[in-house]
Image (cartoon, rainbow, N blue to C red; front, top):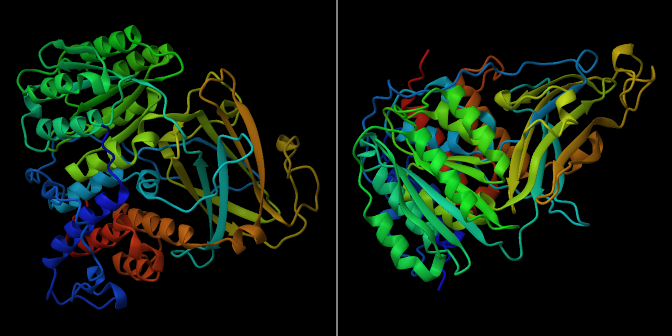
Length: 540
C-alpha cells in the first residue's frame, strides 16, 4: 500500500519546529510586531497538533548540527540585473527556473550561524520556494499565467509586476523508471549527508507502484550498481534493504557514476513514462571528470536520451552549490537542497508530482515592454537564466522544465511614464509597441510564453497582453508575499536596488499578510527574517 505524506502532516511538524525554534527568542527584548510578536511568541499560539503524525524526527532542524565553517563551499558569482529602457531593450528573455535550493541552503546557513556568501542568494529560487494562488490551465494549454501589479515596497517611485505561471495537476501519474545515484564517498560521512540521503530515498520508495522500476548506483572510488531494475512496490523490501546497507568511504568518482546511472535509465526506459536519474551528493567530485564545464558537457550529451536529472544537495563545509546547480540546469531537471528530513518530506512527499513528473519542457519567457507606459524595467533574479531574444524561438536552445502542478514566479520592478507620445527606434520596428508615435496606453507589456508539451518535439508560443489596470485590480497577497521574499533576499545580498529596506521593513510587511497564518512555510520565512535580523554576518 502506497503511503502519502500530506501537507497537513508536514505543516504540523513545521509549525511545531518553528514554535520550538522561536522559544529561544522569548524575552530577548526585541520590538513588538502586533500579531507577529516575537517577544511573547504569540505568533504561533494557534499551532495545533496532528494526532495522526508522530514522526518526531521531522521536527529537528537537522539530524546533527554541522560546523559553521563554510570556507570550502563553492558558489558561482551573480551580476545583478539593472534597469533597462524599452526603447533600447524592449525584450526581456529568460528560461524559467523551478529550483528551490537557494532558499533551503540559506536557511541552513542562518540556522548554523554561518557567514552568508552573497553568491548563495538567488532571488528567483527564494521566491519560487513558496506556493501562491494562481490561475490553473484550461482549454488544453499546459501553462496558465497570472498577472498582478502593485506598489514596489522598497522604491516609492516604482511599481512591481508579478508574472505567475501554473501547470496543470496530473490525474494519474505515469509509470516511473528511476535511478538513485548516490554519493557514498568519504565526504558524505556526516549525519546531515548520507544518513539523511537514505531517509529521503526511503520516503520516495514507499510511494512506488508495482509498475515502477528502481535502480541504485553508488559512487566513491568507483561506481557500483547496487540494484538493477527492481519493481517498485513488489520489491520494496529489497529496495529498502539496498538503501539501508549504504555506507560512506573512499574518494569521489562522480562522472563514472553519472555515466553508469544513465546507462541503467536507458536500459529500463519506459516509453511515455517518467525516466529520471536522481543524484544525491555534496558535489565534492575529485576522481574522473571533475571540472564544472566538463561535467556540464557530459550531462548535455546524456539529456538527449530523454532521461531527466534531479539533483539533491546535502551537507556543508565542502558543499559545491555551483557544480550542482549547473548539472541540474543542463540536465533537464531540478535542483533542491535538503537540509532536514522535513525538507525531504516536502520534496519527495508532498511535492512528488511536481518534483518528478514533467508537464512542460523548455519553458521560455519573453516580455515585450511598452515604452509609452514603461520608462524602464528590471527583472528581479534569473541572472544565470538569461537568454538572447533570438534564442526564444530557437528550439535547439535548452530551457527549464516545469513539473505537474508546479508554479514559477517572476517579478519586474517598473518605472512607469505617463508620456503619450515618444520616439521609437527603427531597430525594433517589427515589434508590437515600436511602430507608432502615439502608443497603446493600456498595455504595460505582452508576455510571450514558449514551451513544449511532454511528448512534443516542437515548441508552441502563447501570447498574453498585460493591461496595467487589470493587473492592478488583481493585486493580492501573492504579490505582497513574493515582494517580501525578494526584499529579504536583496537586503541579504546588500543590493544597490533595495533602497532603505532592512530586516525590520521586511518583518513589518510580512506582518500585514493575513493569509500566511495557515501556511507553515510562510510562517517559517518570518522566523528566518527575524533570525537574520539578530545574527547575520554577510561576506564582503
